[in-house]
Length: 179
Image 1 (tube, rainbow, N blue to C red):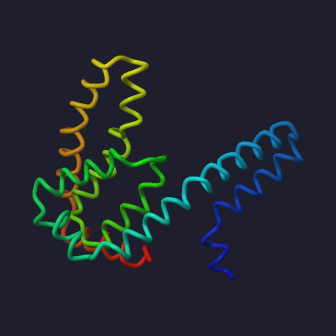
Image 2 (image 1 turned 45 degrees about the horizontal axis):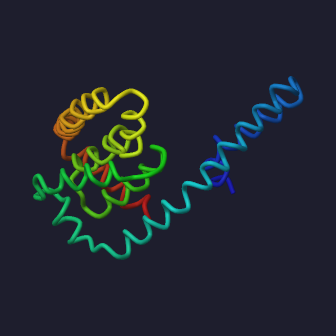
């Protein structure tokens, strides 16, 4: 039971804060509960499809296949696949973290997982279309052209800055926490 409280401590803290707000400042408390509920419903509509995708990825794609196409020796193919997966993704950035965990569990190269995360956050196709329509094609193309090498450089230097021991811990955590 104690582990359950520790695991959900932030959620429970949010409930307590909302209850206090409701009694101390009813208008603010009502608004806070409304926003909290809206965010919870939004997450519950996004996460189930992501988890279904993760389950299928975990079962259908063999670890050896993933290592071959996105592992340590995948080369430029792994980079392109990481960019494609991140750019074709749908959903908010918090949905990318479980996907990144499964990629790590399957043996993907750490820098490719970072590229995937960077692409998810900055080069998604719907975002590019929105930018082209609202800010112009020139802006969209310039930002996209700057983001592609920027993501790769950040991923490369971040991976190089971590020691092999630190990377091993990250892979071990992914293995333990992604089931």
